[in-house]
Each structure stands twice: as structure tokens, then as C-alpha cells.
Amino acid sequence: MNNTEKNKKLSEVIDITEIKRLIPHRYPFLFLDYVTSIDLGRSAQGIKNVSINEPFFQGHFPTEPIMPGVLIVESLAQTAAVLVAKTLNSIDSNMLVYFMSMNNTKFRKLVRPGDSLKLLVSVTQSRRNIWKFHGDAFVFDELVAEADFTAMMVEPDLKNVKP
Image (tube, rainbow, N blue to C red):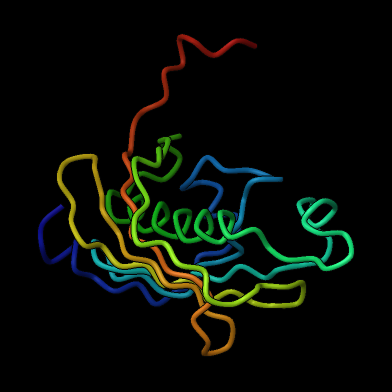
């Protein structure tokens, strides 16, 4: 992919059907509803609508449901994974995304059922299959979480998958 293609902004919304073609995550571990914009190789914005029907609310916490902070960061990471998959044009490739590190992670506000998380991720560095990102999560215009994280894109080892 040349620099002109890599720096292309996509204006169409990426819906859940295409997200599932770009990243391997599935229910109950898919924490991204759609992606509203992508600047290939640079940044993306996603949305996670938080519903009381999420399975984690059964235990976190039954009397005061709060989205776990690590799942907010996972939502950011899945948005970043869609960004990378679109940048590399790897639709239907079954590429896996492995977290390598999380730094400077802060949780600033509680996220509750009914909230809509706006997920903003930007590439801070990329080298071969290793990508570094900064992510911010907002509810309305309030920053609720932020993190710097590194991920690696790898092809699945289908030899070790058992039917």
C-alpha cells in the first residue's frame, strides 16, 4: 500500500457485519458496534453502545452495574484492530490481534448501561506487524478512560486448532 492509499480517509460507516470480517472477536467478547470514521494508517473512531444485557453486568456489579475498565480498553483495542485491518486491506484474513502492553491507563468516570462509548484511537508508531496506539474513550464529551497500548497482528496457526 502506497502512502496515498495509506493516508486515505474513509467516510462510510463500518457496520458490525464488516467488523466481523475484519477482526476475529465474537460474542460475548465483541465490544464494538460500528466504526464511524477511519484515516487509514492514522486514526479511527468507533462506537460501543453499553446495554444492561451485557453478560458482564451479571457480576460487575448486580446492584450497581458498571462496565469493567479493562473492557473499555478492550473496546479501544478492537477499534484499533479494525483500523489496522482496513489499513492492511485484510478483510476475511482471520488475522489475530495480540495485546503486547498497556501503559498510562487511566479510568476517569464510570460507564453504565445506556451509555454510548465514543472510542478514539490514533497510531503512535507502526513497524511491520507491531502497532502502538493512544486511545481515548468518551461518554458524551467527558473523557472516561485513556490508554497507550501495543498490539501485534499475526496469522492464526490453524495446524493447532482442534475441531
